[in-house]
Length: 410
Image 1 (spheres, rainbow, N blue to C red):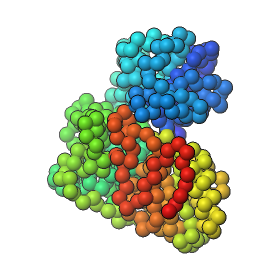
Image 2 (image 1 turned 90 degrees about the horizontal axis):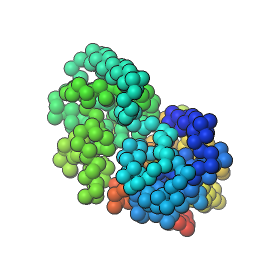
Image 3 (image 1 turned 90 degrees about the vertical axis):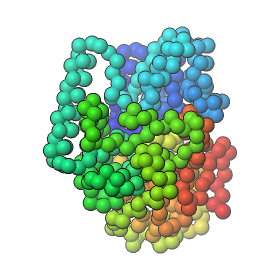
Image 4 (image 1 turned 30 degrees about the vertical axis):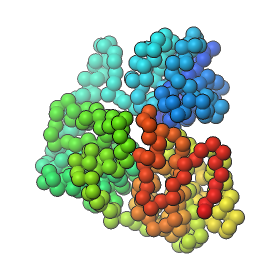
């Protein structure tokens, strides 16, 4: 979960507490994901107990996070009186509708607004707010078209390094087919850096709210000079639903599903990289760069990283934790914060990279180093496929972290 949505979640929980909505209630969460884990931690910090996490994925039933059991949604009907379901996952509307359909009559509250497209109230102030939103989006879209005449506007909906990297890997072929140039709109300076890895493309940096409004305007106006390269929102054809039928790696979804390219199209490699200024301070070939954080993946237990750090430090390696924003270094390591354009030079100098499967792994796909990717043991959304099936990394060592995990680097 990014900083903006986390702050929103903090504020919404404070409002629920002020309203008395959490007092003497059995609190349930819906959808086991990184955001839900952070919500559970925040509730614990504020003195609230969580009864259970509801989840549709049968593979997760019977497991637990921080002592909180993961159960099927229908189980809430056994004890729904005086309960509240708090949802921090992206699919709030579908989850709330599912609870109603199974007969849940308790309170359901959204604590983070990932999908600002959806507002189901017909109140006058809601209509006024949405009208203003549409006008802002249309004005921004028109401004962008005036600024970049005869260019296709690529609207990237999320702050997600991996998605931007995969998109840029195939975008040149798509532009060649359409015989046009482009300008890109992204959220977050790190995403803009991913774009710059591939060339001197014009990049507009927008807030999440601004990009949402611009996308909504483009959809309403059926603007043929915009393109939204993503698979799991109703921008095009809900491409992600194909995963319920067939296992398709995300790279192939971008190549063939989003851009319509032949499946054997060879991805473009980034050429515009920089060296980290403090490179000489990293022991060449005797250091490990660890990446334990991810916005959309459930965190790994601290004990996993403790084993890895203990192993390498005992053999004389210096360990670094790659951190951004308010993230902190793992105990026994040093914090290091290279930019996206510099991270590859750091990893190649260190010689070893170990990270949870996140977008940084995509950015480092071609780094010349010993690379290990750690996968939490979970299914992708509510499909039958494990994360390792959807996010494979060619040329990397793959490890699925299950209960009782023991680190063995051989």
